[in-house]
Image (cartoon, rainbow, N blue to C red; front, top):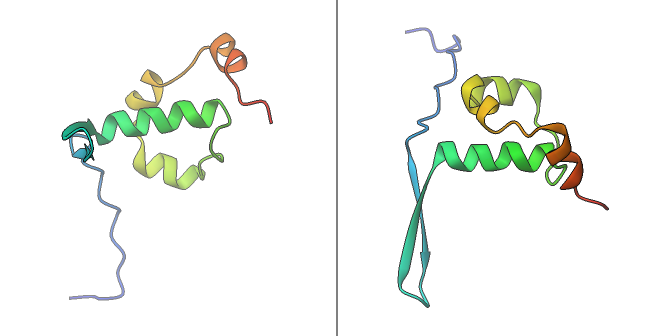
Length: 83
């Protein structure tokens, strides 16, 4: 076995579910990794989070998911963070 060899990163499991619990209300909510990544893409377009590093985005976010999260220019401009 060659311990010095690097392997390609594993593709994320977009179907993975994150469970958020509200202990006061006694309820929980499941959100898929795909949904969280779409929200993150929208936040990036609206300048609410720092820009993604290109390598990370290519390795982590499938092109179809990026396309689904794409805002049109009017939406992005109207809702961008004014700092």
